[in-house]
Length: 127
Image (tube, rainbow, N blue to C red; front, side, top):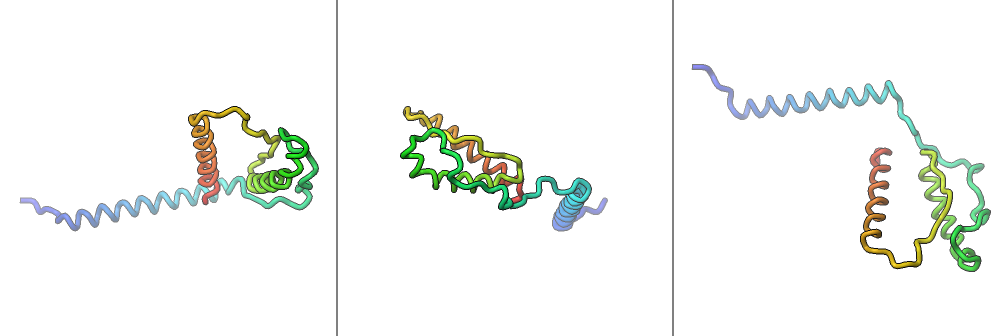
């Protein structure tokens, strides 16, 4: 009769094999990282690139509402621009949602799109 391997030894061999394969995958990832280099390294916006908040009117607002909301909109735009600066994006305009009532389906779709975009950007940045 042939000798059988005990289940504990078989489990130990299988776990060891899994970790060895994972180790080689990690080495392969590091090798690719070294060969290709890190692309899209982020950098902070330099002071020359920052423009004053009141330099351009906010699109889609009346003059009175634009004056009261302009600092808030400028702060949000500056934060978004600083966050996305390393990827080459820029803010080209701001629109208010239409005054008509929007369906819940449309609101849910927009929320899903924004959430997916944020999640993808965090995964791309390794956060």
